[in-house]
Length: 442
Image (cartoon, rainbow, N blue to C red; front, side):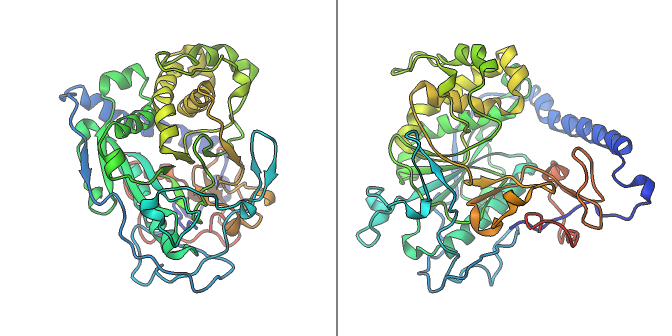
């Protein structure tokens, strides 16, 4: 599903993935990256931070043709790219019904999604009489205007179009709309809206980002709250459900919507969930946005191991949890103990705590997405192309040129890492991965 490579080179044995040399390189890269990303914050101190008006650009609902399925090959292998190829992927067909991992519910019952009933309901404006049980959803891709996220958004949208065209459901696909929700200063467009349907809202300015210690991810709940206050939330995003996605997601299969009102779908993050060491600051943040009704008694044990993405959620549920998510993420970020312990995933914890505080329980899917790397084990790679709905390319692929994975925290002779392209687009064509690279890196 993702074929790319950077930094391939011949090197003498003394230079190959040696820890002390590569540690120096890594430190330099980290410092340089943080300096580069600080430039917008510094420069914005000298600009007008007056909030602008939201801007709507591009069709919110994509217009790629839909096809009835006429075949069912066992495996589909979408290739990465920045734009749909002329001969790709309008052909109908697809590979089965997607992931077949187990679903966990609060009752403890577990069953295969393939066995789940289609259910009833959904938006009749999309479903129609010929698609019974259909629950169409609108993909909302949260983003900023950084080049780093622009190229990721283009790849994500390209694969969304591809998977919609390949959906075995054909014209009854549940993939019915796509919007890139972009946080930018004064809601200014960035040009990508000519290719990807986009809505622009305000991002936090320099003063607020300083208060949040440069934590730009706080714009995700902020942008969602702004979106829900706009006419477009009802008039242009007409589906009853939304899939909240991130820029570094690649859709491997259409996500079958099993969400219902009061029961969203979410991915299980193994580094989230109840932790007694977090009890004090999670409970302090529990009442964030305390003017909202129907809050539960603080109990860290009820916090599910989830984040806000990937999530499929009814719009009414997002309207309930969204403001609390925003307020809780801010409360945790401003809590020194929470910031020290939760780090870069503090906004995810904001969503998990907010959901627990209003009693919103999620269906838990262990294989909703996969987060692979060069060191992925056989269990994660088993049936890789058929098993997962989303590929999240957050981890690195670091290899020797002979295909041997490098140790953690080292940069390989072959290195695939999105962070290499924080200020520029990846080059094209990209070098091939080593012959022995695992299936996720190929």
